[in-house]
Structures are given as structure tokens and as C-alpha cells.
Length: 94
Image 1 (cartoon, helix red, strand yellow):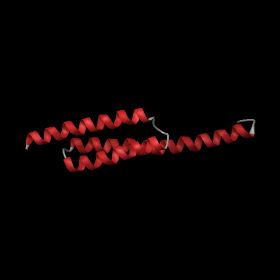
Image 2 (tube, one colour; image 1 turned 120 degrees about the vertical axis):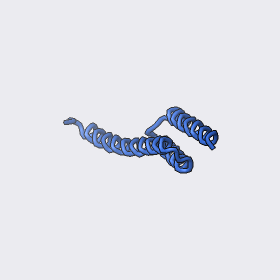
Image 3 (cartoon, one colour; image 1 turned 180 degrees about the vertical axis):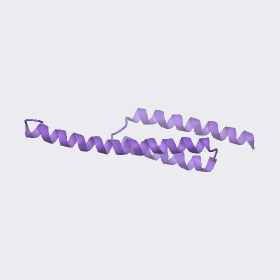
Image 4 (tube, helix red, strand yellow; image 1 turned 45 degrees about the vertical axis):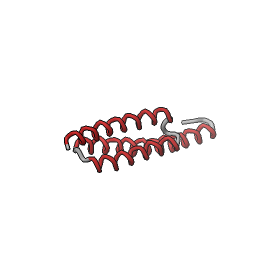
């Protein structure tokens, strides 16, 4: 237990921030997982929507300070690369 009032308040606010950040990260990871699932299901339209949703969640995490912008750029780049490979395979099959 903290001795000082200020350190007790700091501990409380740190916990609130941790939970808020956890919520944002979980939502982002879920969106990325859903995108990967649509790629496995081989649904191009759904994958496009899921990609937009995932990128939006990543951008939201950056704006809230949960994720560094370079980390977010790398994640978005990886998702777009996978989507483009998938789209290319789909067009070759047609």
C-alpha cells in the first residue's frame, strides 16, 4: 500500500489507464484476427471490409497513444501485403 496520497492516486490512475489500453488492444487484435479468418475463408468482399475495420482499429489505437505510429504502420503494411497477395491469387483463379 502506498504511503503518500499522490502515489496512491498515481496507482489508481495507472490501473485505469492499463484497463483502457487493454480494451483498445483487445479490440485491435480481434479485428486483425477476423481479417485473417476471412482470408482463410477466401471471401474477397468480406476480407476488404475486415481490412478496413482492422486498419481503423489500428489507427484508433495510435490516436489514443496505445500503439506507436511506426508499429501501427508496420502492422497495416503487413495486412495490406497479405490482402494484395490474396486478391492476386483470386484474380488468377478466375
